[in-house]
Amino acid sequence: MYIPGYIDDTVVPANASESRPFYRWLVCDILYVAYRYRTLAWTLGVAEPQNPSCVAVNVTREFP
Image (cartoon, rainbow, N blue to C red; front, side, top):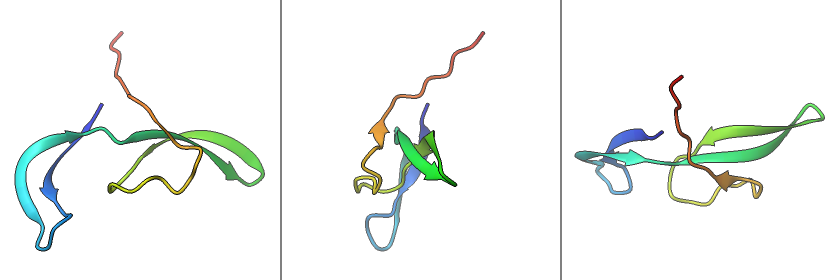
């Protein structure tokens, strides 16, 4: 699965262009109220995730 985007906000002013797919899914381990969870997250930007446990994944949709 992907999220389409058409705005390049790495420049000022932002530039609108043709739509392109972004595949930025990660699986990360988080700690919440003394419980450890594995979560699926969408990332923004081009920097590395702050959480070192995050791993890039490919999310696919399967139809029954």
